[in-house]
Length: 449
Image 1 (cartoon, one colour):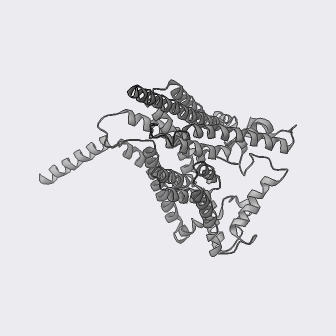
Image 2 (cartoon, rainbow, N blue to C red):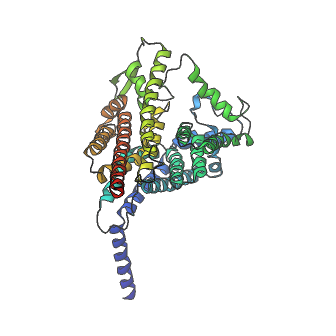
Image 3 (cartoon, helix red, strand yellow):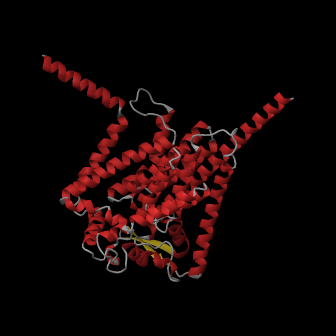
């Protein structure tokens, strides 16, 4: 009887816990599903690309042989060296656990940056739950894409989000260190240098660059690059030098151009490519361009510079109040700026596949929160339209719809809209700051009179 009572009590508590922890329950089920797929996948894309590159590096072989497809800085191979000590199944389990931990921390830290409150245990649904859900849905499908391909994007994103969290706590050098690690893993986070310079953080900027370069010199302690004096030099010679070639066409980077959702990829498809559909797949056609490669590149650079200028203007409008002690401080202002930097990163990158857009969870949370708290119809409309456009690129509607929408830049357009939304949100906050300061000054003048 006692045993039956204890069993009943345990079941009752378990059911009660599941009812009040639906987020933990659902995410655990999803991640366990990915563990199964990792174990049953006959050819792991992660092992075939990254673990193989780590093995080649240890043995001093050419990691950057073009046909092998490893187009990343050498530290990306170095970080996979510890996995070599495990058997194949052990490697898959270890990489899955790494992704689980990084994804959990990433979402938790993003929610903290967005000013979110504790979500569980759930006793009743609040606005915070819907804001969190809206933010998660903005980028979770790109997370799933990365997990399905066993990519490293979640790990890289965690370093950037950790840097943002450190920056919000005024731990500038820790933030620069984390940004530097992210930049070392993938060069595009070097954009944080521009943001730190804007903040007049000169030492932190130099330290970020030092960390990014320094961690990519560590592989030289393991083996010698067969094609260059350093592994970093081998990567630069193989992949970065091509940008200086007169024949290089921005947007082309080791995969189908419709997968590249950066601005370079979108402009390539707009001006240099067309498509046909046959045998159940999309075939991209290279068009003869009436523009010289130099004119095309200058046009792309001009558009990217304009985008940076607009965003810089939004930062400047906010920074003009930083020395004013009477200016109100809104907790989500820094989060909006961090979101804008990360979106600029994937837009300005020479190659941004869908999995790289996992960073959109943060701007999704930020924009949803500001739209709700400010009751802004403009921001709410931008947020909804951006997400509807993004949904079109999912495979729910079939491969034809998904790939055609990718060809026309559905993810790029979604990101541009979210970027515009964050810029508008910063502008609206500045108007509110100005109004509050004006009211304070009027009140002080009345008191003086």
